[in-house]
Image 1 (cartoon, one colour):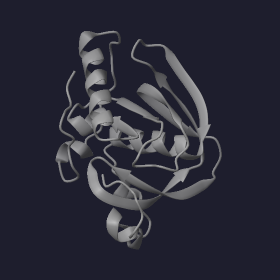
Image 2: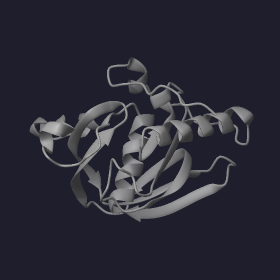
Image 3: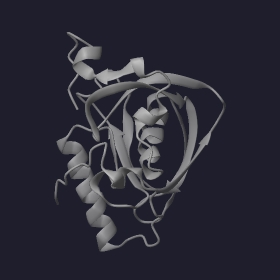
Image 4: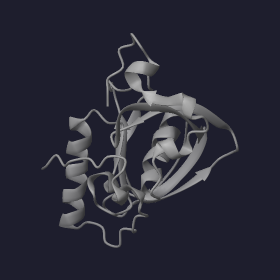
Length: 177
């Protein structure tokens, strides 16, 4: 339907906690998800949270298949996840490089749980309950952080591992955000 502008780090709306979705199968929710999908696709994103386009609702979408921003990433099925709950399966944490459409042109080394269970609902109100690991788990955690007003730089342990993509990875063909 529409490609919406993505809010960038510094916009106070990105720091707000999102409200839960109360009604499913509405025209407004369908339009929001369509706009999110169009926006994410136009920017080659791996995921997008509603707050990133200025909508303060607990809605995230994610999915990756042959993404130029993450050329070596495993495939993640396209998912619409509403009112999510995340539960670590164990305490194993791994640091990995992340970027964000709200923090364009930059990357940071972010600690995330390796194994994760996520629960929530799809756009029709059908329950989702998955246990995932590795990149899939990282993407879900990153997107759901937006619902709590958290941007990935807030999770970086050592700011020496945060910077512009071109400076951190000179000579590598990594698409800029």
